[in-house]
Length: 111
Length: 111
DNA sequence: CTTGATACCTTGACTCTCTAGGCATTGAAG
DNA sequence: CTTCAATGCCTAGAGAGTCAAGGTATCAAG
Image (cartoon, rainbow over all chains, first blue to last red; front, side, top):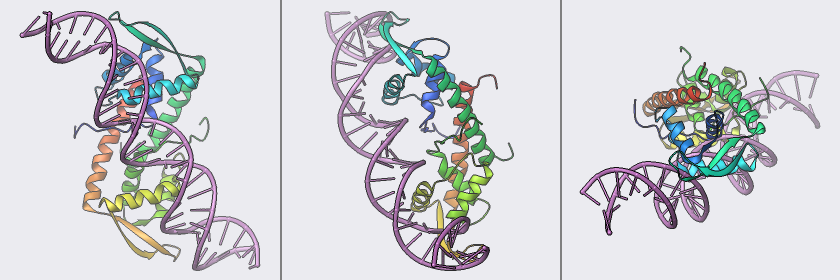
């Protein structure tokens, strides 16, 4: 549709990453690819956004990382959700739903 | 539910304002109140966000303003949508829908 | 005459994203 | 063998937008 939207994640990236990790550990590059595929490339995850986000979330205790090996046999930093992170995911999902519902109600009242 | 969400508008405020003006001219303060009421106070419109946004959108030609009188008989700056603004509203609504659908598909796959 | 609501505005801090780089490894293609 | 794309990590700087916290003025109610 229209054009490639140049989307503003701004605040939702954290939730998307947390959700991506909720099925099991992944490394940064894979997280980005997963989100892009899951959204049909509607959401592009720039590395300049992703890695600072991962750092942020690790500092906050939402995720933890260990060096390991990727599917392709390369060195990779595997991130996994902590208990706090799982709680944060629930919180942000609830907030997102509430927010999205509110915005949609205003922008597209008929449906 | 949960708590009052401290929401991140970031990018959606413009669309909400444009939509608010699509039914007719309003002044800033009324726009804020309208959005808050329409979203059941889920979205709080801070004046420090609103007035810079109005200025921005006027500069971009999406809205125009004239000094007039509010319902309560006070001096007020009445904003109205331009043709470009109406087009922008359609664009941003489409983008929002696409974005919100994508995020929701990731965060709440079951529904 | 003081308080609260209406109505406008600005400044500065803050947070997050994006652009645009950099580096190293691997596999495939030439 | 060399080159190129893909994988994988990272950072610095700029830019955009929101928010907190102020300020001003008018008007009605107490």
